[in-house]
Image (cartoon, rainbow, N blue to C red; front, top):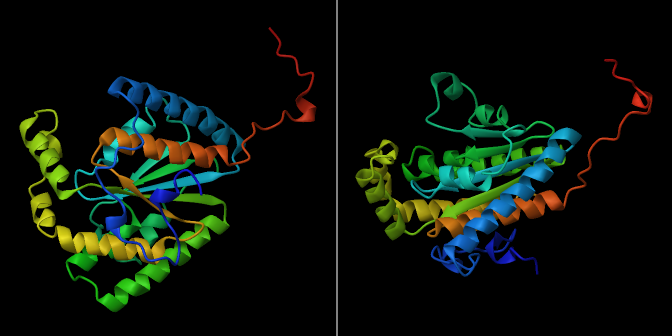
Length: 271
């Protein structure tokens, strides 16, 4: 059994969100100071391997972050990559589709943002919005939603078969924790800009969203593009776990700096 298998949704095996507790803090150490030191070390290791990834121009990674409002997608990016050189790392966010995007199939805008050789790309929300919010609001039928699960699996299979490693993380927070974070946004001046009254309307649909997430995760977690359900009530636990998953992924790749071309041997740089 792998170290992170308890968070991994096995393909073709029925998964329930009740199997994971959002308040789980088992990735944390004995103290906050120890955890912050560990996060910095993990980020430094990720940076060192990402530098080779970028130089080698052979592998590419797509990290998908999904979660309810205030689940910590922005914070995850900030802390997991805190020690990283931004060279070779790119963030893509998906908002309400534009008129141009709506004129194409729903995966068109997503495919344009996937990583190229040597890149780590983080999706802050993703193509899964098109089987979550649209389902919860009944903007698509159940039949179309199932069709989209199949489309997404085929899309991710295309990515993996052409050299992209796909890591999908559902940042699983409790409704109670979301409430606290929304109050933080309202009461702390440096966070108020994050508050959106419309988020309260989505919060009222919490049970429908949990059902939609559970169904989407069950339908699209595959061997090559698995889902991890990340307990995220503790921000530090969330950051540590995703850092460790990403680091393990990088360590499992055949990462090597490119060899110096033979014809470059003996080159002299004149004064």
